Amino acid sequence: MEQQDEMSFWDHLEELRWTLFRSILALFIFAIGSFAFMRQLFDQVILAPCSSDFIFYRWLCHLNEWLRDISPYVDVLPDFCNDNFHVEIFNIRLASQFFTHMTTSFWLALVLTFPYLMWEIWKFISPALYENEKKNVRWVFVFGTIMFFVGCAVGYFVVFPMTLRFLATYQLSANIIEQVSLDSYMDNFLLLIFIMGVVFEMPLVSWLLSKIGILHRGFFHNYRRHAIVGLLIAAAFITPSSDPFTLGVVFFPLYGLYELSAFFVRPEPKEDEDEDEAEEEEAEKAE
Image (tube, rainbow, N blue to C red; front, side, top):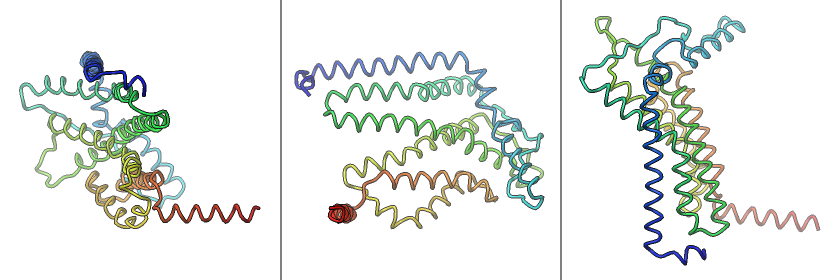
């Protein structure tokens, strides 16, 4: 706190300026690197869910074969062993490929530099915190960064491929030829991955709301049934498939986040008093 008191307003403004400069410079450098390797990344990463040999499809195919070996009557998974699955991506606008190259490079740079950006924010605000506050906030930044990347990974490997596979194979009429535009593909690709990254921050947001007294553990207990229904609707909206496995692949991680959020929030004041009384009774019995 002594360093904070010695710094003037202009010193803080100067430190903020350098923080923004380093953050923008890191984004710029990573965006250039992403731009240089974007063609390889597009073929091997971004467009990988368009082919039947995508790692998640292969894993589900092996899982389905293993379940059928156990019992031939078990048929809960869609057919992911179809080697003919392939999504054709086409472009109808003259400048779409160039602008997609630019925007995707920026978003990829933003994801890759996310830990560094969080560290810059932490470095800027840490001088204003006490030692006990630094420990809590440091944990928040680390946990939030990890959960964001876990959410993005779930979005890329699970949610987006399942959504793409269902929508690309859904047929309203045999006279309609299924083709996916580049803009439509990238919009859904970035949106679903970003949404899953944000959704996985739910435990962190719940913890912050609990710290300022807005949210208590009793809220999660009282509205668990409502949450289950809402999460089922959200899972059905994210992956509009009719089979229960696809719905469950999205629902169970979301429900796990709900229970994890309940674990991180504080109990209600009444629950705190009951716990204190129980500890006092146990101490008296021990004496």
